Image 1 (cartoon, rainbow, N blue to C red):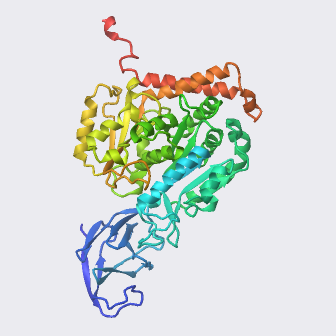
Image 2 (cartoon, rainbow, N blue to C red):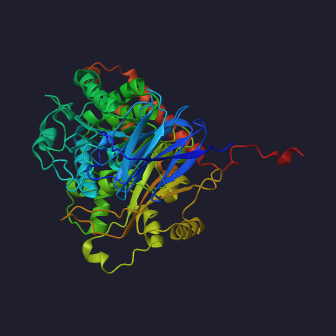
Image 3 (cartoon, rainbow, N blue to C red):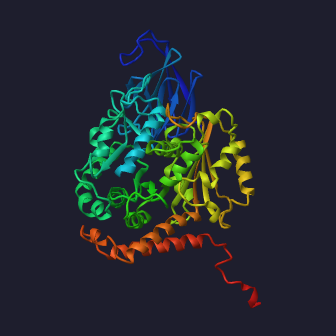
Length: 568
């Protein structure tokens, strides 16, 4: 039975609780005789409030104020004005202004019904030199995208302290209107973190979020994991717990680190193991810098990488592989930078990460969840190492002379030279692709571009995954750092793909590991820090199994079944 709505004649006296100072229009009161039914009612033809039978509060942004509504058993309206909130207990009036007129609704509200908004917060954890420097570029870009100043203030923010904006998934807002990143930076030695403490964005981060030790891991996984790292890990987890307590709907963690050094590999894997214990159900998305085939920063990189990957296999849900050599080549070829610096590399990586997280930070995206990436990209738990690419990577001089349509940037994203890790997708098969478009893009163009890609013989998918594509569109155009290398463009695409060709990265590292481990070279440094030699062979066997896993998922469905035709 539909509820009967009755209007009670206007009340002449203005109650003291009204937030409207000038003389109000006549008040009307609206009552429902059925507190358990679902209904919709319109106020002043401008606002529509839908009351839903659920304990979860829903949020609608309307004009300059926000409405919260929910109904557990009885009905409750909670109205929050721009800088004013009025919450009165059961059998009370609630006042709000619409186009200058004042209206009121009365519902019976239970004492325990406190409205809440469900955010999807992500906490970023930046570990070691690579993680911190990539983090610097990311937070620089986020601030530019959201109009935040280096001190975290947002000029022209009308909802100071409100914290209901979409980008509050990555920033928490203080009562004074300062936006603080939900991030922790940690390193075992102070040099790199001191650059953050004294850099342009020194006022952006809470001092407690910048954690540094006194002696580094010396490129030794065992020091980062067992000795020096052990001393700092509890402090890191305490800071992360404080950030998590400040979230209403923590979705997961973004982990930034490299696996070639000592801190990123050792402390990184230790933190991941501890996060799995404390936040088992939360997603962990890793952005992991792997050693380059030709360019090496340390002799013992293969050891650190194998030991760290052994941990990543179990304790991350998705890992996006990055490789300095591949990104160097992109900067040289596409941006004409003769000698790229780490800043050039990191700004390119930050565009990928920004595109990946845009749907969490801006309203109106098709992709809304970190867990959604997992669902669409990871067919089996161990097969979760992704390739990434970004297009267009183009300098300002060239951008004026190129069309850069949706079809062109999509083709470019599938080019082997666009991949941010040194492996050739033509040597393997795709299992799934996530294409995230930004800017002036319409679904019709995306569908046409994807249809063209599917017809190309060089781009092959495994036969057991016929669909293979997940597409998201965010209408916020890409932002570039002023004075940077990338051109300002109308549209861009970031691709995260799961391809069997990623096994090339592991086989290269395994080969280098085998050459050294056959002679037990450098092993005493690890054993001396409390590791057992058996951990080397255990980790190496795990990676051999991973290579085999990738080989098997790439087989045609018929290849691993006996041909039954001979029996008949």
